[in-house]
Image (cartoon, rainbow, N blue to C red):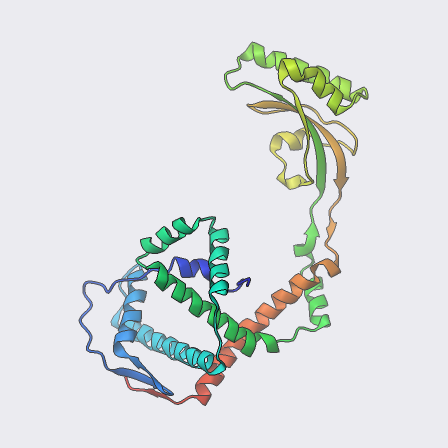
Length: 318
């Protein structure tokens, strides 16, 4: 299962904050009743401590009071979400959980062992991390069923978005190259580099006279280690300064000037060029539809959460 909208990396790196040294012990009592569940003052103060531990400077008592109120609202919403998940009987299989963890590994380019170490470095056990991830997936499923599935994006909305964001879909000019490279040893002196430059210049003349890249590469392979290769299409803006300068004004089928770097002298042939243009509407339609669906979903989640609150029995006792 591809979990695109879950904050998987944030979930992995979530800090388990310890209560600051100045925090006073809290006697746990009921902070709020949410239908048949309760939220204790201990839960609320734990959430508050975690937030305060992240703060760059100590907030004022007024700010702390506002933060405590906001956190209680979040905890109430979370209780309502968990209740709705239980009501609908939503589950996360071990396979889904493992796929989500594998997605995290791909995004972070970490092995399982490295991921476990990263989690532990944040003060969280890996079983606890798995449970947090399971909750995130369950929430994602719930939002998908309760909100996302009811979001509709019309054809006219997709087309209007495309017209309003044409610059985002503009394709840059590209160039496709073949190269003949003459390596320059790391400790090459002036005389040796000049000898390689002369050989490269001769090779360029032969190429422009009509000899094939492979023939010329073979002629200079033994003495100069020359190698030929073909490069994939590259956006002109991504070319190195040396390549860009060597290819200035060179049309399809032509050879550029020698491109010289510290470690090589490279001859460049332009196999193809494309001018800038626009990605066709049909190719970006799915992408735009997803973007608009996400935007609408984000807006309706707040409405959905508010509706859960309105239908629930909530008794705040602070």
